[in-house]
Image (cartoon, rainbow over all chains, first blue to last red; front, side):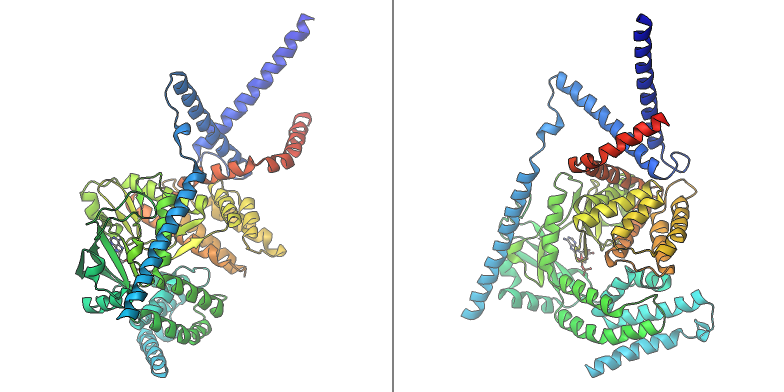
Length: 113
Length: 452
Ligand SMILES: Nc1ncnc2c1ncn2[C@@H]1O[C@H](COP(=O)(O)OP(=O)(O)O)[C@@H](O)[C@H]1O
């Protein structure tokens, strides 16, 4: 009985390890780049993606550690993009009004003289 | 009109005849002959003024339509013309606003900053504080650049377009171009010119650019001062710095060329892959660098726009280049309108694979221009029509590469595209609808792999 459980966990661990190694190899290939690094083709994109995910993972780790130390994390301080877009649209509208207003002034000036 | 036509024909004839000896009277080998005639065309265009200079600029961004020799000649075309006297520029301003420059701005400098075929630029100072579309208020006394369309430029260009049409047909007959559609090109030309003649478009795009790069203090564009702007007068912030064409001076002042090259290339990738709108008229006179390593973009006269769908497909094609995957390149080029006939697919695929593997320079960096222009040529050789925006984008990327490499010879601009393409495609993959559609097949594939 104990044997079976042992084998089950051993298989589980082995799968886990193989998957981890596979992923690490992909990250490594993706990092390498260049003519000697990764070979071309559809798999290369997967490797490149894996390398970026690994970078993201490191960043996440750093953010979590920073948060544990009670520091502010960059993601939370970023302004809401939708609100920024709106502010820009309003700014642009103001620009157009400024422009039309000056056009109107020119017309008045020209018809007056 | 009739006499203008004579002038045009006469000018072209004079230059072509002048080129005959260099072309071995038509008997010299292909490239020698084509180069001689291309130079004659370029000189004629320079002599004939704004419409032809613009036309030449358009030809220079269409390597898919014209011979290499002609494209190269048109790229080297000079757009420096003698400055107009200030009185003529003041007259334009007066007719646009009904006021003197001094009533619009605190001061106006009669000496021009620069003079090109369509517009002339003068310096002025802002009279009252102005809050631009985006960013901090400009205080009174801020130095401005006033770009003024030359009097008569619009009219003479429109008149010349009509005549250019018949001339272009002659170009087609002289076989300087491959598979050439003069009407389509002239329509495109008329549209570009119309847009460029209305400076408000340029101002709007510069403001949008400022907004797009709001989180990056190292990439700037002049913001527009709208109350003193019209279709023919553009008032904007004055940018100080060195033109990229004066890079040696900039280097002497301690500008960090490597940082600039990487940052400049990255900023361009961001325009294309993230925003789908990009400055399509980059050349070393339109880029300034400052001592604190800021890049200023000028002259948004020609702008490339991509729909969201085009943007995604372009990203895929770029990813194909980054990851050397000819199937991906073909699949998404097809979605962009590159229609490879079934019986050519294998040939094109093999050649494309060779191109992708052959883009490495001896130092291990990749040569985008080699791939981009090679791809266009490959399609041309196989009689495959190239969608018009494609040529412009490839030319722009090749220019960015040239500029970046002038700054820092070892830069690999394909590498700067890698994070953008990978992230954007990664994001698109995470779309729940797509996941829902693809996950079952992915699981099945994994199981198949395990039980195999
Ligand atoms: N905002 C600005 N600040 C400083 N110089 C400028 C500005 N805008 C234009 N210039 C100068 O004028 C030149 C020509 O302007 P540009 O907009 O490129 O005109 P064109 O479209 O006719 O080529 C530029 O190369 C630059 O030297």
